[in-house]
Amino acid sequence: MDYHIHTLKNGLRIVLVPMPNNKTATVIVMTGTGSRYETERENGLAHFLEHMFFKGTKKRPSARAISEELDAVGSVYNAFTAKDRTAYYAKVSSRYLDTVLDVISDIFLNSTLPAKEITKERGAVIQEIDMYEDMPMRTVDNVFDALIFGKEHPLGRTILGPKENIRSFKQKEFSSYLKKHYTPANTVVCVAGAFSTPKVLAKIRREFGRLKKVNPPTHIPFTAAQDAPRIAIKEKKTDQTQLMLGVPSYPYLHKDEYVLAVLATILGGGMSSRLFLEVREKRGLAYSVHASVEKYPDTGYFVVQAGVEHGKLEKTVETILAEFRKIKRVKVSSTELAKAKAYIKGTTTLSLETSDAVAGNAASSLINFDRVRTLEEVLKGVDKVTASDIERVARDIFKTEALNLAIIGPHLNKEYLLTILRAG
Image (cartoon, rainbow, N blue to C red; front, side, top):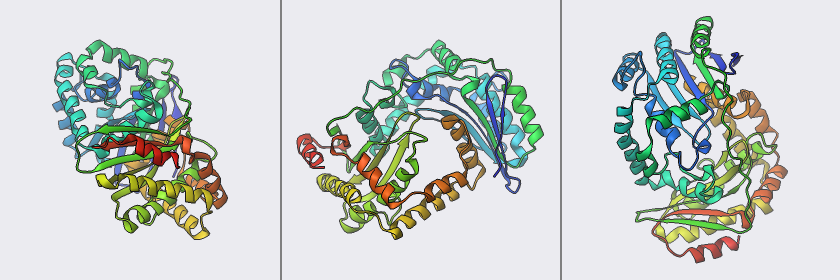
């Protein structure tokens, strides 16, 4: 797959990914800002602003005008806010690409942020917060992030922000944030699928070339500092306990990032992974259990998440810790290593089949490390991982003093859980 990257004079990057045999095309505009760029007082503003981009432009003066135009061509469209990036996208039959490119460009560049819509949208955002509060599986990561990063650091705060902030934001704050954070230098426009390259490139150059060159925003760096295991419990009446047990790990572009990916797959990737077999199949402790890796430019973490019966929390934690110890002490077999590599290579390849997946990956790559990481590069990186690498990285990250356990459920016995963690 070929990636054609163009950089405008104002610093904005365009990446075009022709997929001529595809019948769809996707437009995504991504900017390198999110909740980690907010002050405590601003927390929630980046996400709220994302909502406001769909509330009207001069050309399309209402949310209805925007949605009707996109719906009229059968487009799949949305936006998302993460801690380090925000994106707006639309996928459509390639014959209607001109329409979605014009709409997405318009809302990104020309949103009017009407004050009356801000007032109305407060309720929608607060309902979104409440919706996720009723879904502990989706919010236990907030408890974990606050624990591992600290509530005082932006990475430790939620993306949606507290309700009191949502109720207080004024139009001028949205405008100020937009001007400061949505700069050409930290913005990527990507089109993937079947399209006319000269026509699409000319349109993007014309529309986005008008942006003035501005210095991109900066974020507060994070340095992990922990000398003892930690626990955070959000006491809540639930039918199931949600837990995340993890440790600090590596940032983007770390020399061992592929080792970490294979390690996560061996422990908790797929239904034949060690944790799935031990926690679910052998002991029946959980319905869902998996391991994953979160990465930022300056930090990252490895974490296991599971949902368990309240009375089986302690046994589940002990079982996960036992697998951490085992993989530090006993080298993985060549068969298990080969299976984990094949799993990553297969799932990664499948994840890049469609125009929207390709566009999202290309834009994220440019935002996160200033180049597009190709599928071939990922496959080669995975292939190089050895059993000795797995053992070495496991010993590096799975340290008793680095353990962090986040829980949502009706639990009060924090000291007993700490005893389990200290036993490592």
